[in-house]
Length: 321
Image (tube, rainbow, N blue to C red; front, top):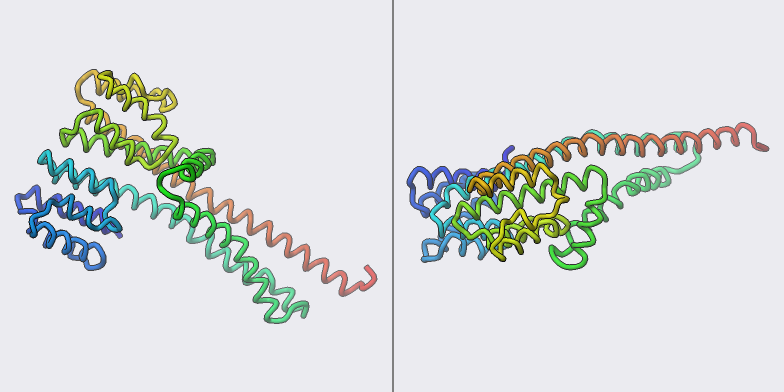
């Protein structure tokens, strides 16, 4: 199933490209029901009252994040609104594919985890070592060993502010995790490059585009590698002169060629696609390895249970053991 936000943005882009007015396009862009349909209806009412689309989106911050508002405002100002919405649809389509890849990779291990939790304590129940209540407690304890760390990790990611020292610490810790760190880094780079490309296409000056795109990348270590480029642009020099060498030779080469040929917006788009594809491969690899790690933990837990059960049986047969 496609992401509802990507679908709504793509529909709106197609209708605007076909020549429909903004109000008419908003009326029909999202007809699938649900929260996005209601949000687009509110957008239509706000725009009908004389406000711009970006201002209408800014009035619904829980639905439309700052990046969307910023890019739509730039696209509206430059007359490239339809193209901006198409690029936003592509971005949310990529994010949706990444989420689906991770979810699909976790379905089987989660199912096996629950089966193992139910089967593992059964010998103790059959041997009379535990009551039904004790059996239920063992099952619950088994599941909590996995769910509590997962819940803590989810809470840290979701509740940590998007800015400040805590976010910097979290982003730095994630960057050190094998495979995950590289995936998140490339996703942030793709987000930056998409934003920079769309802002340039919307006729926003390079220095301002750099500042806004860096703010939109959403990752502190990546933003730190890019800030030198923004400072270089503000001083009237090429962005590439200030970019960190840690971005990689391939990234820097494409960027420099874009500056030399005057096609920096197209170079940013190519880099966005490259970084997005790399992030997708890394997240798919993570989705492949995560079940294996879960399987290993389950096997270790089962081995411990088998050893415990064997010891119990031996003590039952040979009390003096």
